[in-house]
Image (tube, rainbow over all chains, first blue to last red; front, side):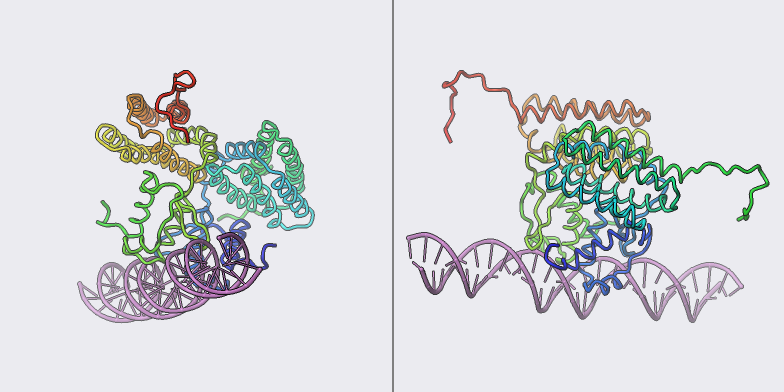
Length: 236
Length: 236
DNA sequence: CGAAAACTCACTGTATACAACATGTATTTT
DNA sequence: AAAATACATGTTGTATACAGTGAGTTTTCG
C-alpha cells in the first residue's frame, strides 16, 4: 500500500484495465465519458487523458468524434497473436533470467502464490488477473523498452482469449491449469538460477500448453453421431 | 493531400515526431506547453492529449508535475536495442513479404525513391526521415498489432542513433548508405515476390550493415601512435 | 559565513463552460 | 408512400479559469 487511496486517475486506469482483461468490458463495447467521470469523481479532462493512455497501451480504441471503445478482437488479431506470441514470450523469459533482481524475484513468487490461491478458491476472473500479473512481472524483469510494448499487448489479449476459452470448468481445464502452475514454479527456478536456456525452453513449453488449450476449444473433437441422428439440433 | 491543412493537433504531433527523430529535439530535452500551444494555435488541453499519445508511442516521457521530455537514450537503451532489433526486424520483413498489398508495395517504392533522392541531394535529416518512412511502410505491411508497437519504438531510436553516428560525411559512410539503398531495392523485390525466406535474410543483412556502421563509430580503430607521441592531445 | 526554513513564482493538473460535430427523427417534397 | 432534407439532441473536442505542486530564492537563525 503506497499512500492510502492512489489518485482517482490511477484508480480509473486500473479499473478499466481490469475490466478489459476480465471481459467485464467486452471487445467493441462503448465507454461513456459522462458516466465514468461521475462514477470516479473526475472531470472529463483527466478522464480523456486516461483514455488516450490506455489506447496507446492497446486496451482501448479511440475514434474521433465517436468516443472510446474497448479494442476489438477479430479472427485476424487471433492469427496475429499466434504468430508473434511464441517469439516474444521466449525473448522475454530469456532476458528475465539474465536480468532479474532479487526484489523482482520476490514479486514473482508473490504473484505465483496469488495465482495458486486463485486456482483453488478463485473465479475465472481471479485466475486470469493473477496469471496476467505473473507474466507482467516477467516483463518487468526483462526490462527492455523495445520489447515491453509488444509483450504487454500480447498479455492483454492472452488474458481475454483465456477468459473466452478457459471458461468451461471441465476436468481437462483444471489439469491444464495445474500444469501451468507447475510450469510457473519451474520458470521461477530458472530465473532465480539465471539459466537463460532453461527459461527460453520453459517459455516454449508454457506457450505450447496454452496454445493446445485454446486449440481444444476452437477446434473441439467432432461430435460422434451418424448423420441425421444428432439430438437437440435446431436449425437456424 | 487530404483536405488542405490537417487538424492542428495532427500537425503538432507530426512536427514533434519529426523533431524527435531528427534530434532537432534531443533526448532529455524539456518541452514547454505554453510555447507549443501558442506556436500551433492550440490550447493546452488538446496539446496535453498529444503529449500523452506520443508518450505512449515512445517519443516522449511524462513525469507528473514536471512536464514532458523527449525520451532518453542511455547506454542501457542502446544495449536493449541491439538485443531486440534483429529479431523484430526479421519478423516484420517476413510478415511483410507474406501480407503486403499492391497498394502498400507502391507506397514502399515511393518511399525508396524519396530515400534515393535524399541520398543524392538531401541533408542527414532528410535521409533519416526517408529511411524511417521506408521501414514504417514495411511495418504497415506486416500489419501485426502485436509486433507494431515494438517495431515502431525501434524505428524511433534507430533514427536517432543513425543521426548520431552517421553524421560525419566520410567516404565509408557514403558507401554504406549506397549499399543500404541497394538492399532496400532487394527488399522490395522479395516482398513483391512474396518470398518470406529471402525477406528474412535481407532483414538480417540490412541489420548487419547498420550495426557495423554503428559499431564503427562507437568503437573506432585505435589511433596508431606509440605511447607518449599522440599529437594534439590535451588532458582533461 | 553556512545551513535550514519559509516564501515566491512558474508550471502542471483539474474543472467547467462553450463550440463543433454526428446521429436519429420529423418534416417536406415528389 | 418513399426519399431526401432539415432539424433537434446528445456527445465529443477545445478554451479558459482556477487550484495544487515543486523548484528556486530569499530570509532567518545558529
